[in-house]
Length: 119
Image: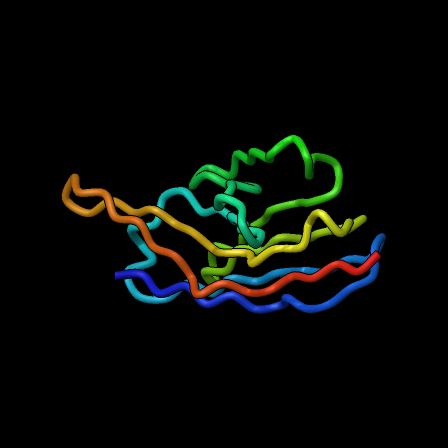
């Protein structure tokens, strides 16, 4: 089992910045891909950014050049630096990871943290 706890959300004006953190605990040795998803009211949950165990990153087009995902393997944290925030970035942001143990894949989610961007 892996537990994920997000922090760092809040209210910010358009053009501002926030840094989300996700602390992982438990069977962290099994973690593979880590990612940030978001879900706005009435919308489907979407993948925002991901980082592989090898450090490769991917972003949804709408955040490229504004957001950056990173991780600290020593402390089992993953971060999402969000710059140039816009009202359309308003959503609940969720930390995600998948892991594999003995050939079986598992998926874990954090509880979410609210990000609200005012115009």
